[in-house]
Length: 234
Length: 245
Image 1: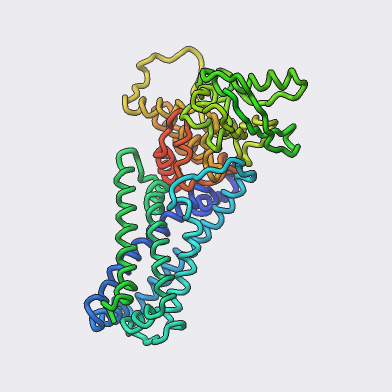
Image 2: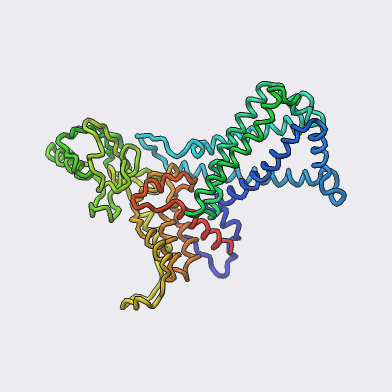
């Protein structure tokens, strides 16, 4: 146990939190919940594609002009991008550090191995890595357009259809969205538990909400590549 | 009953260990798991071999001394302590794997015995109340609400056996620490030290090298005393409040 002398400068609040396992988990929980909130709006925005090219392309333009004239063109978008980057980095770094610690805490494995916890819980780490890789692909595909065959700025409809005309793009997207569903299924409830919002009465409803969110987001996101594959959107 | 046992044998803390196979026969289904091991040890001693070392004390499920991982489960297939696990839960001819608790914070002393003083140090960092001792205070001197008394009692049931750490894939001591924190923090007697208790006990827990909580729930499933998983949420809430407030 460390003692802090009166004359010494006490370590800062955030540093103390960051050093503890519970604090790091709280960082993971908050960053995860912020990303989840973003994803709800992202998914709802994506559904504009079902109303036709003009609607979603106009929606994309509106996103860039949000906050104008107080903010300049695309400023709000960049503020969101910066915030999300901070969340991704905080989430990933704390996950990495906690995982290292967790693995070190059990240096000798049990000889009698047994399946532990649910599938969603067991796949949090690798599922997270898959999602991280997907985000890189997704940005190169539909934000920067580096790997997109059309890559027309402010024409997301054409970009999306072009992207999902390639089978591997659909496969990766759908797999990543299934991983996302599993990640949220455990992650949302786990975040509530970590932030101390859970109790015996709420437990059932938090698990229900986690499953509902997981299902809603997975189905909502997956509907777009499926619509392109089946020719509903072309 | 005739059984095949595969038991972790390790001569000392730094000696290499391995799973060793033994055959035991004439086991009664009414025997406890520890009595079955006693039978094996009698045979080993008669043969001139080293008996299997394991911790045990009260043998009635209230002290928390005994503990071993049986077929990959802390305290075996029933939700109880190893001393209260009876052989009728196994079948004649079964092969049973017996291993010590596995955690870097619980180093193996010998065979199935691990050093659990890490738990004592967590308790020493805040698992008590500071009060003058002497003659017992009047029973009605500090009123305790019924709900608080029930919660405190539920968490005071923890016997510190370490099954939570053994069952957790991360070797985390969150359930143990939360049981102690919630037990004392919910009572008026524990109120003055509420925030320093949770901060110091979490810090002590981290210092011992236990892993973090990933909310797998394995601890609460293994706990012979039924400490609920939501206790960890209660400790998290108190820790964050104490650290941010």
